[in-house]
Image 1 (cartoon, rainbow, N blue to C red):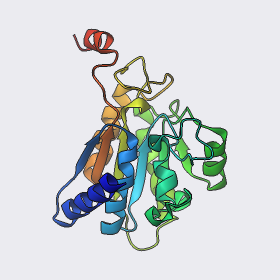
Image 2: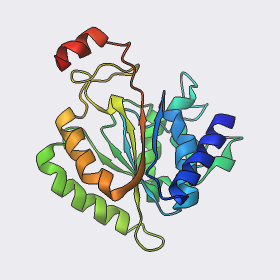
Image 3: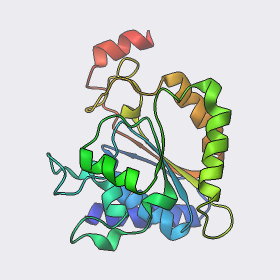
Image 4: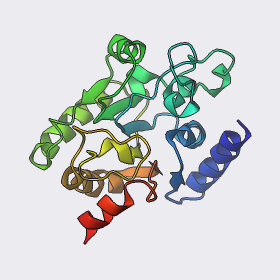
Length: 213
């Protein structure tokens, strides 16, 4: 986990120096480091998690045992022997956009914590004002002190596979590119930084090129 510790230090330093860090990585396990740095700089920061996956598996619930399916379990302190990473509460700090692929234990966990989830079918450009209103009310009722900044943790597989397939975990029935663009235009100015992860242009590159032409 040395890379995560280093990333946490770099993210924290960038935020304290007044920069807007964009953390680009191979998979969403990068959030273990980036969110740790964020929460050190802004303990009340709220996390907008855009992903096809819940990413709150533990080694016991994960079929693959891959760390990229566990970042939120690490960050919320439920992974045995790795509880030193705990820096956030699922029920106070997190909102999901576009999740649709998960293990039953993960789904049961976020339901037990009453985590706010905006399913893909709700995520339309026309609904952004309503989403913003619900989101603001949801987080304002969970604030510990004052106003809280946002961090956008964006996994490209949150986007529907028919619109962007160049990722190792492409899933259908996801967010549209139009919604994603409008979402970023609305929330990036109100955030302090972001993750950007899972893009691999070597995958589905012929299909992707046709969409870009």
